[in-house]
Length: 75
Image (cartoon, rainbow, N blue to C red; front, side, top):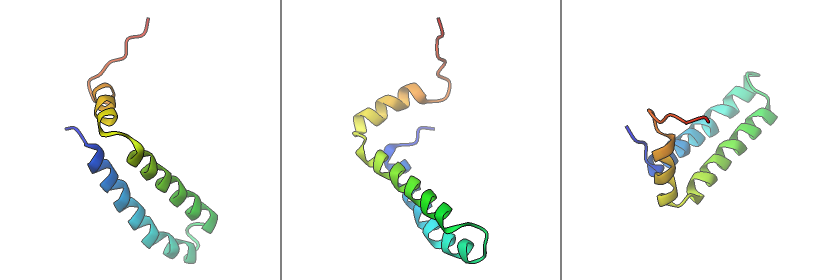
C-alpha cells in the first residue's frame, strides 16, 4: 500500500507532538538527557521540513522507485 506524502507529513507531525509530550517526563524521570531530547526533536522537525519541501510530483516519482518489489540492477 502506497503511503502518500500528505500521510507521511501527518504521521511525522503526530510523532513530534507525542515526543513533545513525553520527552519532558522522561527527562524529569532520568530516562533521557535534555540534550538528547532536544536533538531528537530537532531531527524530527528537520524530517518534517524536508517532507514539506518536496513537490508532490517528485514525492510520487520517488515512491515509484522506492516501493516494495523494486529490485536494483547491479552491473
